[in-house]
Structure formats: structure tokens, C-alpha cells
Length: 162
Image 1 (cartoon, rainbow, N blue to C red):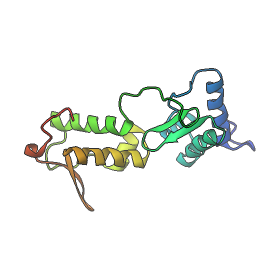
Image 2 (cartoon, one colour; image 1 turned 180 degrees about the vertical axis):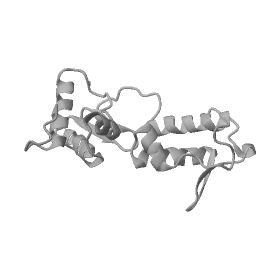
Image 3 (cartoon, rainbow, N blue to C red; image 1 turned 90 degrees about the vertical axis):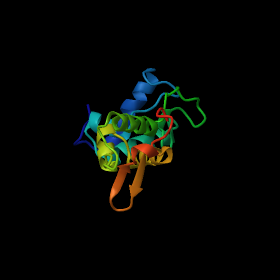
Image 4 (cartoon, rainbow, N blue to C red; image 1 turned 30 degrees about the vertical axis):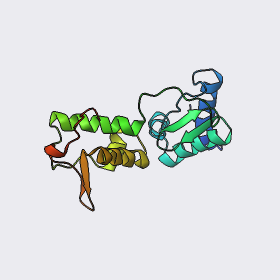
């Protein structure tokens, strides 16, 4: 339980809880740490406080961060537990499925960054990576100041599993 009125900063209290999980073996070297969004929801803290939790764990040598993938238990170079796909690729794959099912038809906008951030509990950089990945694969085009739209069906990737 967090002491919200006490002198110890909330980020230190949450970092202590995570350190306890590491020490008890609940989180092992190479395991992903909970995301900032997960910290926010679980401990009812602000995003900036959640970021400070991860930074504090890095400063203690208990975690390391790989941009666009997340934070992991251990020090840089620790072998990471296998993840099937980076989170931005999982988000992109879900959007592709929605396109293929017809939920998001050609020439219609896909969910914006803020909607992706809320739906998937990710940081803005991860939502942007998902959109960039969809663009690289040819599923969407971005129109400046308008949004990102599904491309015409004839322009979809030949290999739909992409």
C-alpha cells in the first residue's frame, strides 16, 4: 500500500515494490517490467511518476530500457525473455486484422496516437512506431494534419500476413 501523504516520493515506493518482486523471484533477469501505463493503472499514479519508477530502477542497476520495446529486469546486455513481437508490431498486426475484417475500410482513418495509447496502454513513441510500421508495410498512408488512412485495397501488401 502506498503512503500518499508521507515524505517518501511515490515513485520510490513503487520502485521498492518492484524491487521486492525482483528479490522474491517474481520478476527474473530478462523479464519485461510492467509498462508505464500499467504502473499508472495499478498504482493510480501519473505518467511522469511511472517514468520516474523505471528511471529509478535503471539507476539502481535493476533494469534497463530498450527504446520502442520496453524495460527489462537486469543490466544492459542481459538476455531478454523471448517476446513474440515488439509491442508496436503487435498493435500494427491488430490494426491489419481490423482492416482485413472490414472494420476499418479503405480511405477511412485508423485510430489516432492518443486512441492507441489509451487502448493499448503504451507511450506515444510506441503508438507512432505502430503507425510507421503500418505505413512501411503499405497498409496506410498519412496525410499531414488530417490523419492516417487505410490505403485502397489494390495497394494492400500481397502477403497479408505482413
